[in-house]
Length: 73
Image (cartoon, rainbow, N blue to C red; front, side):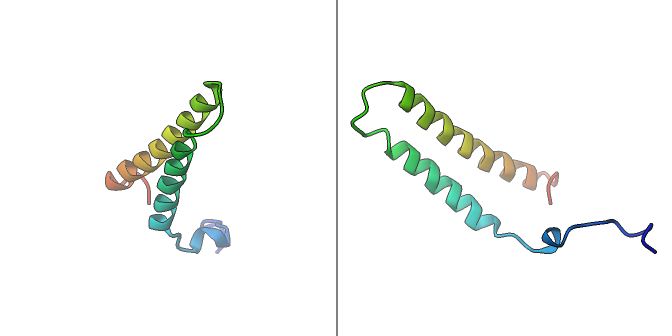
């Protein structure tokens, strides 16, 4: 019997809150971009803030595209 059923972790059976995760990622990206208005003088901080915000938004868009195409469940 164990050979015919896939072995899964209990966490895989819990439904996730995709919409809350997407909203949280977008709000986090907006918060990172809001930090550009600060008292720092170097551009290294700006590059990191913009890069991390773009990465978060790319993950959200990529997830939405993959789910729409049926490549992720």
